[in-house]
Length: 286
Image (tube, rainbow, N blue to C red; front, top):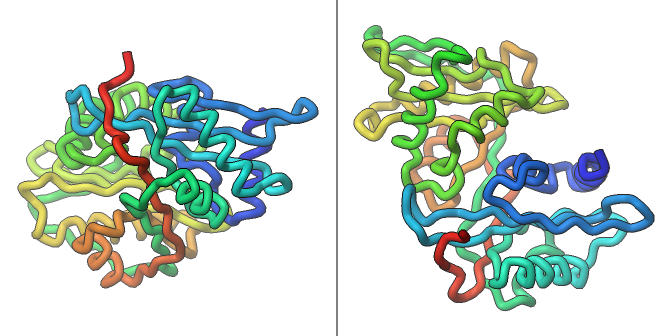
């Protein structure tokens, strides 16, 4: 696939994926997304993709947020700026831009954007300490064909106000379950009286790197230490499947979460910042 080849070249040069999975999965299906693909001599050399982010579940307002991947051989501030301008023309309004490389940041600032939100990638060596749960709780693996509805309801409860995680629906879940990396045994459900109250979803990457892909606990159980134990359970699963390092993403502004992860031995290895233009909020696209 031409796009896959571009993303592979970018990852090899940067050491990181050029697009978040949230955007990359939407390129071929256009699920709430718009994409612009640049080609040269029959080869894909650039892609810009913007996805719609509702302000909250069921609300009409929101904003477009874009990511851009450009072949390492032709990157420049001007190239990023040109794709950003093309995306603005296509959408009819300026999108926000996720940026982690210097040229991306410079293009965003050149366009008059300001930093609005930052994600941090955190890592730690494995193995970690063992998880410990109260006897009235149990941990089990996700069962495809049985647990989809319960997981979606739990996820919407846990991430009701999160701009990416809250938007995951049945189609998005099915798309992730169809990916080569998906392992139902790596999606751990914390259960009380047969009802899921939390989960830790893990993901294996090449190079013996394991990710705490998503982790959450119902609001009524927060502050009990269960989020820490769920994360430890996920790290243990990853270590038992060959990972020697664990990683996760967190909101830099969420001091509770970053403080928890730092206390567990994680440290920040890079930052990814969302730059926003003025007046970005809009009505939902038809």
